[in-house]
Image (tube, rainbow, N blue to C red; front, top):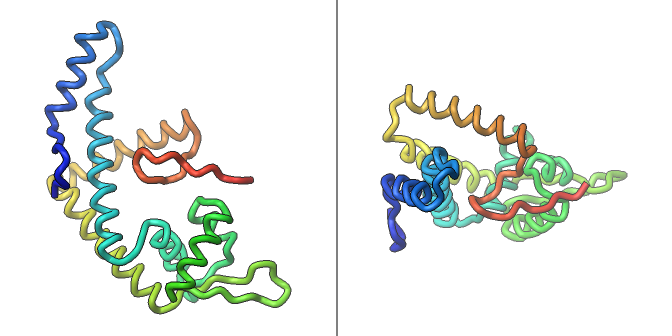
Length: 188
C-alpha cells in the first residue's frame, strides 16, 4: 500500500550509493545501499504496523502496556515498576499510559495495603484488544515476509541477530522506538 508519497525502488539505493561513490571517491560506500534498504523496509514495516494498531483503536504506547500485562500470564497483573522495566520506559511514561488505559477501561489499578504502588490488572476489554491487535500484527508480519521462503527467513533472522548483537556491543543496548525517533531518556 502506497500512501501517496514517492515509492522507493530497490534500484534507488544503488543509484544513491553510485552517486556518492562518484562524488566522494575514496569514501567507503559499500554498505550504504544495504543500510538504505534496511531503513526503507523499517519505514514500510513501521508504517504498516502503526496502521494496523490505529485501525484497531489503539496507539503503540497503549499496545506496549497491554502487551506487557498480557505476556505476564495469569492473573495478568504487575506492579507499575515492573511494567516500566519490561516496557523499557520511565516510570513517568508508564504512569501516563496507565492513566489513559484506565480511563479507557482497559486496565485497573489496585492498591495493596502497605505497598507503595499496588498492582495493575489487565481487564477483559484490554485482554480482548491486545489479543486482537497482536493477532493482526502477526498476520501482517507473515505478509511482510511472504516473499521469502522459510530458509531465506531463517538466514535473514540469523544475519539480523549478528548485526543487532554487534550494534549493541558497539553502541550499547538501545530502547525499541519507532524508526528514526529520538529515544526517550531513561531515568535511573
